Length: 190
Image (cartoon, rainbow, N blue to C red; front, side, top):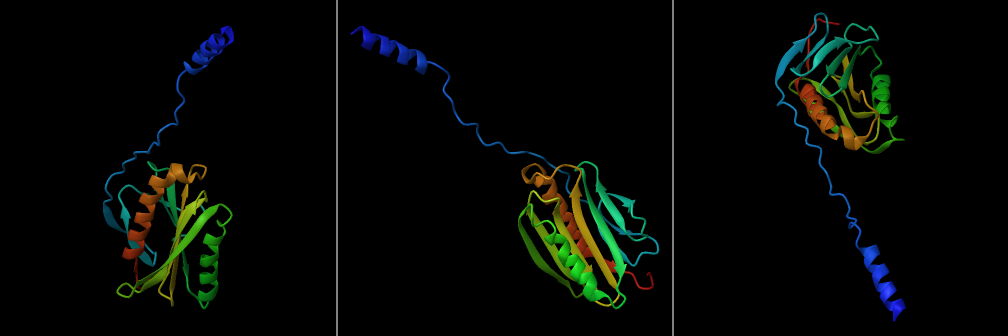
């Protein structure tokens, strides 16, 4: 009998602790301002586009004249834009642009490509959405197939952790799509 009372007492002591419960799912609630766009054209460059007022245009550190960085200080992200003229090298430019997203396959969960065509502005290309912990979450290229070739990539100033950068990456993907839709080739600038 003493054993039963002792076991009941011991069981009561053990079960009186705080009940362990799993933590509830948390959602990161980041809100960014609604995008306001204005047309941007750098002198002597053969292309222009609408950019988000949140982006600060900086010259590329590489030093090429029509290469730009659209920096988003609040998001700690940058869209790197490169331009090259097409000079009987469209095949190699396309091959290089299509290889770039594949460099992220080691860390990416998936890479989704979608064809982009705008006959009105004479722009054709691809938009790549990279899912997972890859260094770049989105990339694109645009061309008119005869004279102009434009590429862009999103990178963040943080270690790529898809869950952490997801809201900012989604915001910049929308900006890239808007940029692609508004690119206009400038005649005479090359």
